[in-house]
Length: 344
Image (tube, rainbow, N blue to C red; front, top):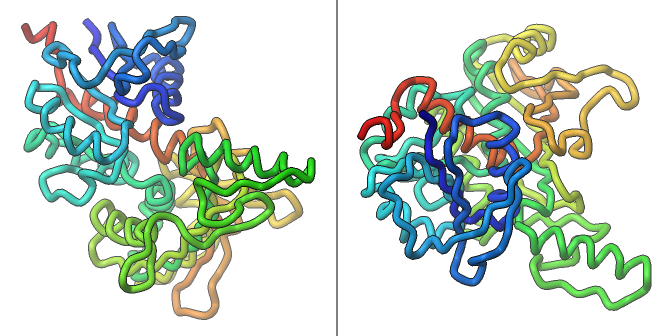
């Protein structure tokens, strides 16, 4: 007997991607339910060769639901995830609402799958920020090999990280540039077409943005609290796929060849690193793919035991939808969750 899975926020970019990935990976679900706010009730979304009609999250009965993949935003998650969890449903939340709660595991399965067992405290598991997810997939095998002391990362984040509105704004502004029409800025603080914006999320008192703070706090929680990390997060005019330039300082020596070999064997990583034109991965090639791609591995001679690399991943997949479904698979594979119908 399979599981009953609900997708909360099924009409959004990530919710639709979750439905696609559940079908692609042949997730053991007997029933999948699409949920959203009342205004989206009756909207149709695709699930494989089927069409699901969206139901209202607000009055849905979760008593027979095993897993709720929550992608409806932080405010909705804060209100509904505890209520859903109280009905015995495991909530895997994609927002930032629960990531820093000591009683909620923050999981990237390739990195800290063992921590998933802690979900029973609140029946909630948190998905990390999209920029953090791909970073820690790349850092984990290197940390195991030579122990990371410090990371300096600059991100190049696609507009899909800001939702459908971000993608629509890039499209509309690009069209306006080519047609000499009025260029309208709503979603982003400055124009995004043919531009880059060094500002994602709100500014904090120390001058960093919340997005940059998230990368620090989440890397420490997922990988190692002793790792020092500083980030600069930049929005770029790319539709899908986040890229990161990563400088890493290690406690122990590690050569470029050793790093390349370790990363080639690591789960979730795909090394494409030829020192020639085109011998690297760009966000365009990562779109629709599951892997975290690593290129441009080289020595950083400015520090002792330093390396530099380029890391690219589809932010809607590994950064959000795929990671959430991998967490659900982890619960099932480790026999931490039985279908309610079977249990009854």
